Amino acid sequence: MAGCDSNSSATSLEDQSEEFEENPTRDTLTEVEKTREAQAELKDQIEALAAELKNISDQQSCPVDLESYISKLNISKKRVVVVQNILSSAQDRLNKVHQNCLK
Image (cartoon, rainbow, N blue to C red):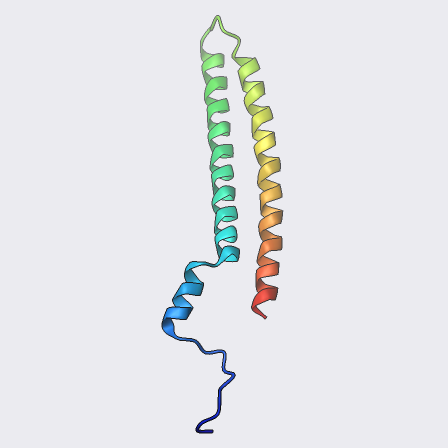
């Protein structure tokens, strides 16, 4: 085999590290995952805020009608859940594409 050109896919460490740093698929997957986590956290915070407003409204006679704000928060929470479900589906599809690319 001496003197023959190799068609090996092995590359130098520098080439591998360059590919590792610039992987758009991995970056996209990471961004989607972070967005999903942020959406879940936002949903939890909306639920906590709505519960707190409901608690304040029940305990005090407040001149401001908090029910409308609670209703708006619940609508926002539903929208966040829809976006979260869309992101989850997108991430699942991206993971499948990524796995197929690795094969």
